[in-house]
Image (tube, rainbow, N blue to C red):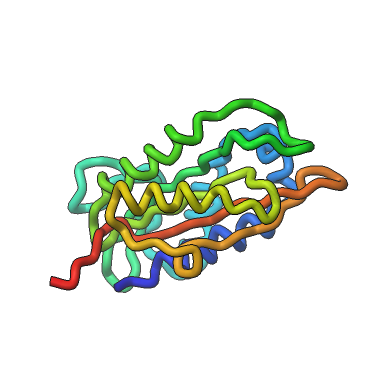
Length: 184
């Protein structure tokens, strides 16, 4: 099984850590930042040796566009990237109600769409109150609806983020391969 998704997760964590000040704004507003992250990740991939990195492009064997495509060890990879926001209340963060169920369903749909040994799903779930574990139920929902084996230990990283001068929240970075692996 490929570990490229781990490299992708570590890349996203690095990008987030390097941009904590910038990300205070979308975190406080519960504003998605997928477009920005997509180009940051594409640049990171290219700077770290991935070939033919493109955004919103088609890989040779696919008809539909994916967020990021690249080649590694002569294999074509596609990444579907999401930045789902939560609807949990937290001091210092706007109380905008966001339909997290639709966000999670979109991740499930992307998993089914890619369904490839070379498809990678990456998402950054925000904002999560520090040390709150409710987000794990959404990971369970993705497992239930896709059959993909996901665990917190193997697929997720948590980054603690400042939202203002005194408050913090967590963001959960999760990556996995979109193909359901069978033992047969």
